[in-house]
Image 1: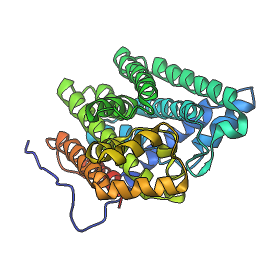
Image 2 (image 1 turned 45 degrees about the horizontal axis):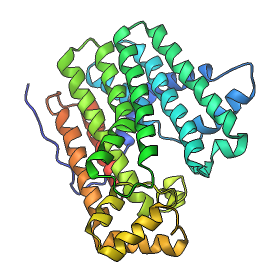
Image 3 (image 1 turned 30 degrees about the vertical axis):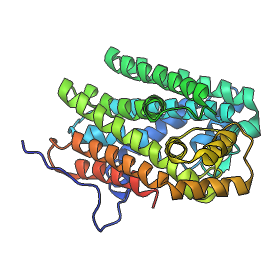
Image 4 (image 1 turned 30 degrees about the horizontal axis):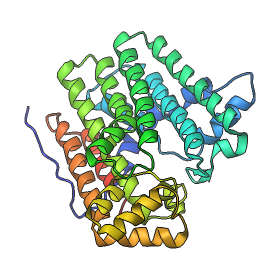
Length: 337
């Protein structure tokens, strides 16, 4: 078996079309599971869950589960329910995150907690977590259960870690990478790894797919950090500058603060403490990020992790699935341009 290294870059714009085409039939089955399992005799539960689940998200994580199963030539159907479980975990965390963050928008729509209230959003998030564990138990694999339950715990730890780091301008790059490795990358990694478990492909394949998903997840979050300052609400599906106004010390802020003079560092301290949150302050923050190349360097790091993701599956045979996964990484990076 020979390895092919696929470099990030090239002249053709990357696209999600290959992975969308690859998993289209499987996603129909996953969506059927999601629709069935979000039902309840309590009408508010499917109404609130449906507001977010049907809200236009790309469902990247369950697509990765399906694509990785195809990469391994898995002929069964266990991964359909597990991909639905992955999406339920992700949706539950989004519902909880919006309550914690006080977000106004999610996927270009009014956040569910603003429509239905914080208590309902939290409880429906708990309901979706419960549904995800039902699906895991039905699968019957203790290893799958261990991987996904551990990912759920790590995500929660990452969110708490981020909460304690909020408004802390002293947060280091290393600490921040630990945070996003937990709160974002853990579920990407688990979504990919469980395909190797159901395909009984062995530990080496499991860890290769885990590394692919983990590095993709970090790259994905770093790009999100960058576009919060350079994109608009219509493109992102949430309000531009939310991270700045919420005092989230993301990597662009960490880099700009470290590289700034005393006056600029004071601005960042005040901003992260919530004392500089006007549109003019956001504009000044963007100017400082440009002046210190903080956005460019954040995207450089995203490309680095994206390349690590692609390298992790280099030993897999060339084919439609490998191409689709590689394009998905490139697309995740290209969202910032």
